[in-house]
Length: 457
Image 1: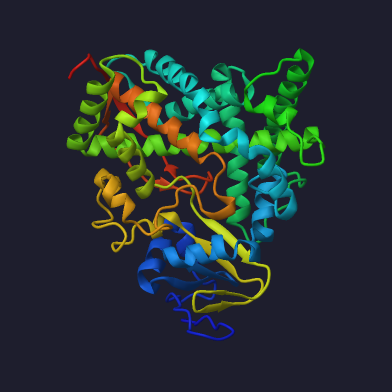
Image 2: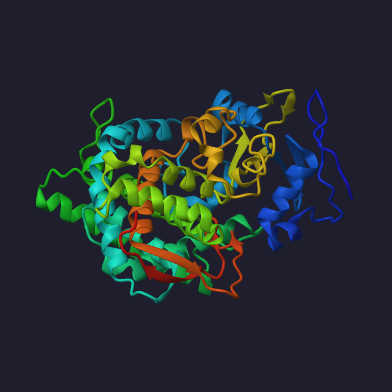
């Protein structure tokens, strides 16, 4: 059954061909990314589809993204479903909060994320990546997805809290995975059971959240007791005051810290995992990357000052995030009637922006399915429409840690590419998974063989 999406006036929005009374629910559950790509290719710049009885609009042009996320940012919020999914885990942190609270918190926290400040964390990022690779035996087989998660979690633990969580990555990682799986359960269920119901899933989720909150509170208490005036993000949050001189409550600090902890390692780990996967499939690009790193670094660890001399390394990272963007989708709900381009939307209309689809438009990226870091060669990148590439979102809610994440990914890629080579083990099913996490990860992990490198120029 094919239905159109009527707007208040203006052109009719193309409708995706749906034959089920439940709309596209089955297709979404089977392969979310493939379905969304099919909608984009069939409907163009904007298309409607249904998830059960819920109508959705997919925006798939840079102009419409700009209209929704920038021009009319205040005409949308994240909506009830997103709040229901994320607030039990992230509370009222930057990702979940809305309106005046979000503006206040972002203003307080923004100075800590300026490039001039995050430069101070470059050495820590390199030290932890060097430490991690030193434990990898030549010829060993590793789940690279798991290893990237461990090293980025350790880095974030240090720069956020000045604590070494390397020994706790299994425990913390397990708690985070359960918490993120709960978010995806809520997002993919019409009638999710409340968290206080005594199901096994809810019991495990509550235990995971309790562990995370206890760790956050312990770090807050220890920092206050020490009287230290550190440069980590937790210290900054504890010192922060708004324009009226008010400090954040412990609960708000925990919410912000947990949000930063989750987002600060999850996205970079996913980006690096897919980067190694793509490099292993394209040895010519891998060789070009390693030649750049070897030539510039001459066997030493990279520094922040080296990054400007490693442009191709950054191109590789950006291209990986084009094909496998960390964020699955940006969802917004219209607070009032709003016009996006020529299209008039009703109050309550849900829109979805999917980097995975918009970053595969052939008019934005020639040969869009091809892994080609030259898409981000300086001249090519300068010619892109402004919102054709949005791995960190856009507008006033753009990821506050985008500079941090790019610097971290750039440094880790350079460090590890110089020390080891990854070879993809044959016979694996490498399937992008969006069911259990808020990022795109390989469903069954990514198993690769390690070959330690000597210095070669």
